Image (cartoon, rainbow, N blue to C red):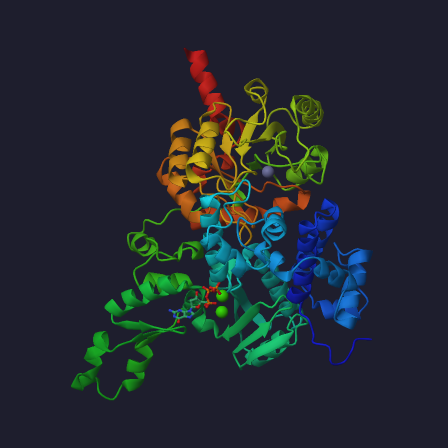
Length: 616
Ligand code: DGT
Ligand code: CA
Ligand code: CA
Ligand code: ZN
């Protein structure tokens, strides 16, 4: 039914329109649930593993989870007519530039609306001009500092143009690609297949997907890859390398190599470029040049083949002067290096450590035995305590802390002392069903207490004292200036009832900059007070980041890795947290939720400080 000469929209473009509807509704101050529905639809479409046009043509829009009747109708309108009347109606009410202003970090819908209505600013360039001219500080609640921030935000926006995909979106797409490729070929066609590039290194954002495979039928593999339903465009169609464009607009490269080249090729295409350069320089010092297939002698160490007694055996010389490696381990070992985990390959000390065989034994997903930060329907979670507990137990966990938001967080309903008492009854009831010797599973009762604007907490100390584990986090006022937000956070860290500092910088990758908090000072305080620092595993947070986690441990902090799950399936996000930790050189010993329950509890500051008190 579609109009033949209508430009074909890819998933990302369709998603952008639904994001835009959400943004317009935000500025217009529409119903929150409606806004969330459009935002969710945008995310669903962006992450969809099939071309939205194909789903639409097959009449299967409604079978996509997250796409209801209203959204499906709008997608249909968009794909068949090229427009959505509802969207047109909204755009007529708000100048396009006002929506764009919301993209400037620190300018939310309310600010954009005020700038528009009170100062008649309707574009990012007008906003810049106004900020430069000091015309924004006349607005109530705005000052020279806000103007400075807006200017910084505009500069940041300009730099962000190269669109990278958060790993939480890219990885499932890459996994889907590999699974579909394997399914499209007779079993055994592909002997080895792995993600390479930034995906294998678990970078926070991904430029493009790199996949490497071994097969003796490269042409068949190439054809199958380019024939996948998610290949909406083909950029490169070689005999051993193809590049396709996925429905989201992201590029994916597949290379097929011979088994004997796997080690060198995987190392090369894993990168990072900086690591590769360091490895290549080391090889050069030893008389070899390194490319994506092999080490090739530069001739120095085979000089003896040129002596008269060896002339005529060039075949032997050639075979010796090229070295292939079936595994990365062999390549690294040949160069005198211990194998380096992909997450460490950023040229940040791993080469020296590999040479001295001093690389850390990095934490693994299986080391995590429980979690200390999670939500339920008591606040903004989507499942009950019982459902979350069942999922955690089924995942093999030994303990699980229920830490719903405290009161004081405006956007969600919070749990106060009375609510905690209700939760305690439920948790006791569920715990009674588990083996008592600790061999089974234990629910803990905690809170994610809000660190309020002045550094006080959303629950009284007497209430916090009754809980098993207290996480304290900042969700609002993230744009306070450095000194204020740092002091605010330090105050919470120094509270003897606060065990864990949750997602310390408050960033949302690609969407919200970290707060201006002085991370170094906060980490020092955590080390001094025994406050555990979180690596939040949600791929839109990954907070602390790998480098900050590394710094935290260097300063003497202990860490905890939590999914901050709001739904049972979010327990599956754990690998993002663990691999972020690995990027920070973290070992199991640095992370408290690798320990059995009793030992873990003993590492919390409430317990150690209670012991101090009772020992006196
Ligand atoms: P991305 O895609 O921006 O998230 O980051 P990567 O690391 O996946 O980069 P990509 O896809 O351009 O290339 C994949 C790997 O291939 C990269 O990590 C290292 C290697 N590589 C690519 N180009 C070069 C190069 O010019 N020199 C060296 N030494 N290595 C390269
Ligand atoms: Ca890449
Ligand atoms: Ca690439
Ligand atoms: Zn949380």
